[in-house]
Image (cartoon, rainbow, N blue to C red; front, side, top):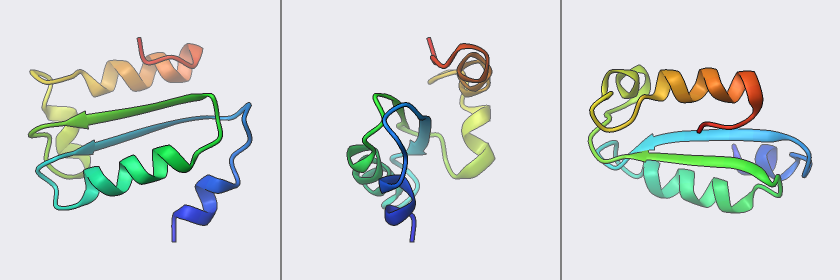
Length: 79
């Protein structure tokens, strides 16, 4: 289960969730996990039509996930 893991994150840790509405219940589940995280530096990216897994990296017309993750790794922000 993922819930116990995200609950263990500290407030000073950072996390990014990326999901898509067209991937079953994953968007709802990611929202629940996001809400459970106590970290203050957290991001939830929800695509409308990003598909599953690495397909979200191809949905650049919705959001550039590659750039967001690179920025996050560089400075802790997706903006």
